[in-house]
Length: 160
Image (cartoon, rainbow, N blue to C red; front, side):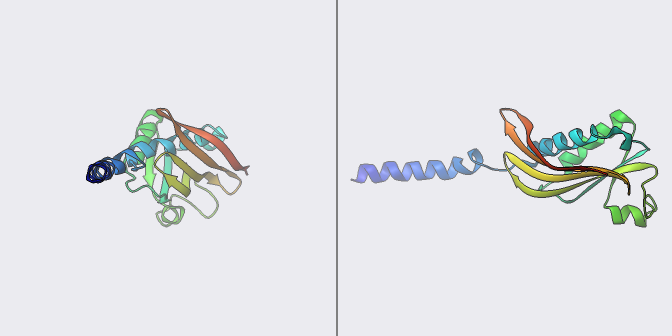
């Protein structure tokens, strides 16, 4: 009887030590790749909106515990494609004079609004906006399969 208690105790200690790291601990650097998959997919949708000098990124409604890895990915994308990255909300960009009432004349804005974020899955709504009549968006379900993040479902897709 004591032998079983010792075995159970050792198993409990083992699971408590390794359990958190092995099962579901979120890594913001890894999760940033999921957001970047959605970003690239929407960037390639309605490419006429991808004009101007500025690519603005609104991360005010993401559930990531650390947005720096995602910002770094998008900054690299901007460097490779000749954009200046702005980190702000639509209202903030308006206040700074980048956006008029109806358009972002020298760029476009990506906005993420998370529905759910887990260690190996993300559901987020992403919008790319340039003008009142120039925008596109969708809700993306993204899961990690093997070593890569993949979009498993696109819903609520719209274009204006």
